[in-house]
Length: 170
Image (cartoon, rainbow, N blue to C red; front, side, top):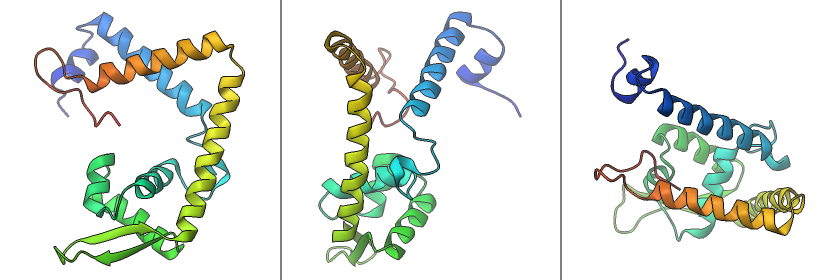
């Protein structure tokens, strides 16, 4: 399989400085994913994965979104999202109703049980982050938050050449 663009250049060793930065980001990603438990079998002591929890989050604050809106927002494969949503329906976490303006679309909403499950997951995440922050001094906490805000600002900004940064930035 032929590699192209930046990936091919990295594989060929064309830019050692860029490769070092790529590895630094990958190292941080592995560290942080492990630190917050994203890969745990029971994400935040729930039967749901991190991706499923993220879908619940989107459903918790949106007013009757469609599956296509959620898929677009989270950059999820529509088939994968469909399987998640059918699981939520089976578990009694969401309900769906046909859109009055477009009968092809289903409007989604959390059920009271879905809101309860989401609230429990959200509370566990807040507790985990609070525990992580409380192990740091107030100065370290402020430095970390400033660094996170810098990263988000940088990744939301399009590149100088006018090309957007890869991903949704959410």
